[in-house]
Image (cartoon, rainbow, N blue to C red; front, top):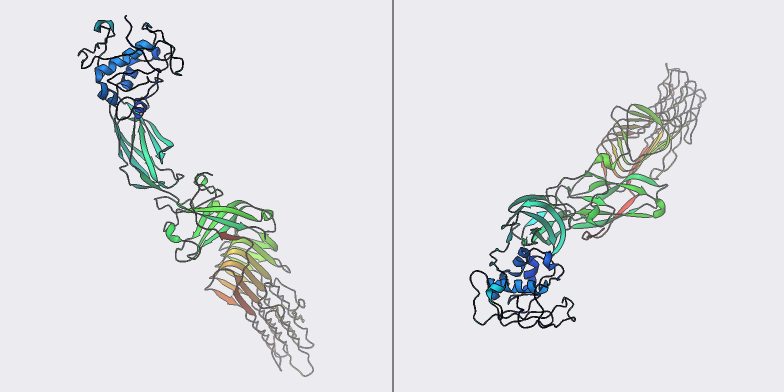
Length: 619
C-alpha cells in the first residue's frame, strides 16, 4: 500500500481541518475521560502506546475517538479515516517513506513521521471509504461510520437541597441509556469519594439507602451513579446529611478515689445552665458517649438516661472501663444534635452491669462498696450490733427495711450512757437529745442520771446511740449507726436506728437507749419513706412501789446534699417515754434529738463539661 504523503511533527498529526491530537493511551481509558480532555473546540490530547494498540478492540477506540466533539469538528467519516490512518501508522502496517524518527517524543514509537491531509472541500464517500492524497479509496480499509450514541446517566433523586438525617432511610433513583446493563452507586462529599453504597444495580431503578449514623454532617454530599464498563457517570445535585452536629468534652476527676475502679458508672448531669437543650432531641434519644472525639467511635461507651428534663436537671449514667486515681482525670465525649428518627441505646443493665439487689434478710457492717445497691421491698438489712454500717455506691435505693434498732452501745455504755439509780429507776441514754432521769418513790432515793448529749448536730460524722442505765430490769441499748454515700440516694422504704426499750417489770427499771445516727452524703437525695432515730422507752414498774426508768434521748439524722434534697417522707428523732411508777416521780421522757440538712459538696467523682464543638472527622 502506498505511503501516506507528508510527515508527523513531534508525534502529532496536523492538518487544516482539525486540531492536534494524541491517540488514547490505554484501552481502559473511558469516553468520559476522553471528552474531559477534548475541549469545546475540537479534539483533545489522547495517547495509545503502539504495543497495546494492535491487541485492543477497534470498537472501543472508535467509540472513544469518535465522540461527539471529535465528530462535530471533522465529521464522522473523516474522523473514522483519521482513526484508521493513525492505527495503520502506529501498528507498523504502513511503510515508512520519509524515514525520519522522532525520538524526542516520549510517546513516539520511533516510526517515520507522516502527514495526513484531506482535500479541501472533499466529502468522503457515503460508504465510509475515505479519499486521501496519493491514496485511492480501494487502497485503504473499509470503514463504517460510528453510529454509537453517547451513554447518558441521570440521577433523578436526590433532586438537590434535601436535608437527610443520619439513621433515616431515603430513596435514590436513576436512569442510564443503553448499552448500560448494571451500575454502581457511590456517595461523594465535596467532590471526593466517600463510599460505594451498592453495586450490580439495574440500568434504571431505585434503591433504599439507610444513611449511616457515623457520617459527618455536611451540605455538600452527592450521589454518583457509575457505569463500570464505560466509566460514564451521573451526579446528583448537592444535598445535606444531618448528623451529630455537636460534641462536648467531659472531664472526670478521679484524684479522690481510694482505689482503681473498673466498669464503673459515672453520673453526668445536665441543666439549662450547663447544656443547650435546643441542640439535642426533645427526648434526648440522640445522646451518645465515646472515648473518641470522632464519630467513627460514636457509641463505644454504654450509658443510661435515668432522668431527662429539658427544663431542669437530667441525669445520665456512663459506664467507664477504668477509673484510675493515679491518672487524675479521664476525658470522654458527649455527642448530640441529631434530629432524625433514631432509637436511643440507653440501657440501665449496660450502664450498671454490677447492680446489686438485696433480697430477703442480711446482716452487714463495716464499709460496703457497690456500683448500685438496692434493697428490695420485702428485704431486711440488719446492722451488726455494736458496729456501724457504711454503704458507698453511685446509686442507692432503699425500698425495704434497714434495721439498726438497738444495734448501738449496750446498756450502761457509750458516751451518753444513762446513770444507774439507787433505789430508783435508771436514766435514759443520750445522743442527739439527753436521756430522761429515772423515777423514784421516796426520800433518799437517788435517781438514775440522764444520759448526756454528745457529738455535733451539723458535722459530717455520725455515731451509735448510748445505752440506758441498767437496773434490775436492765437498760436498753442505743440505736445503731448507718452512713449512706452516693451520687443518687433514694429512700422509699424505712431506715430505723431507734434506741431499745428497757424490758421493765422490776422494782427498779432501767432507762431506754438513745436513738442512733443516720448520715447521708449524696448529690441528689430523695426521701419519700421514713428515717427514724428515736429514743427507747424507760422500763415500766408493775406497781406503785416500783420505779420507772428514764426514756432515751433522740438520735441524730444528717443529710448533706450537693444537688437536690427532695423530702416528702418522715424524719423522726423523738425521745423515748419515761417508765411508769415512782410515788415521787415517774421516769422522765428523753429529749428530742436533732436533724440537719444542708447543701455541701461530697462527691469523689466530679464531672466537668467542656465547651461545645463539632465532632472531628477522624478518630
